[in-house]
Image (cartoon, rainbow, N blue to C red; front, side, top):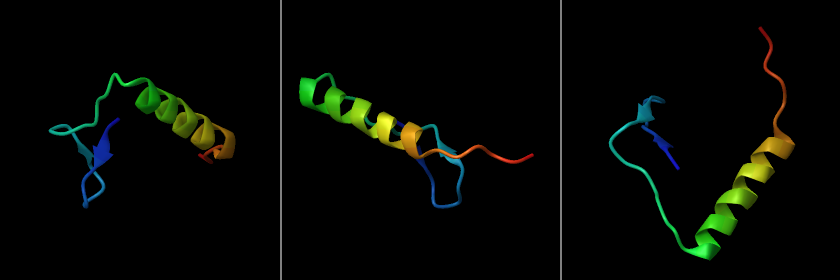
Amino acid sequence: MGFLLRNGKYDTESGLLSFDDTAIKWGFELYSYFKKNAVPMEG
């Protein structure tokens, strides 16, 4: 998982990584939540 800096740019220096089953499950649930609640961008 990557993070944004306070200025809105993507932080290429840090991230979050885990191989624990509960962390992987949480990651899939988080992705599913955002995918389900996403709206198309205009432009």
